[in-house]
Image: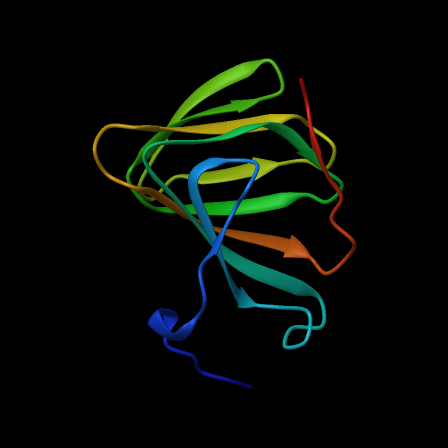
Length: 117
């Protein structure tokens, strides 16, 4: 069991994305079954169309974004819940002047990310 202040967790810039950062809140060294991450996509930021080899369960903490999942576009905002199945292409683009922030829970398995062009 552990309690950690979010401000004490390092933010890692996502190189394949624009103005996007990730914090690993609970990693595989702490949680045996799931990892919890926080993503912050700043105003004007976006994450390109990509796939992950594991499913994503997400909860939006702040802001809004255009989220493309497969062939569908969704506008999501604070307090929305998003499910993205494994290997389904998806992308994010922040809308407005606020950062788009969400929690993302994934199973503790190898997560292979592939950019889709």
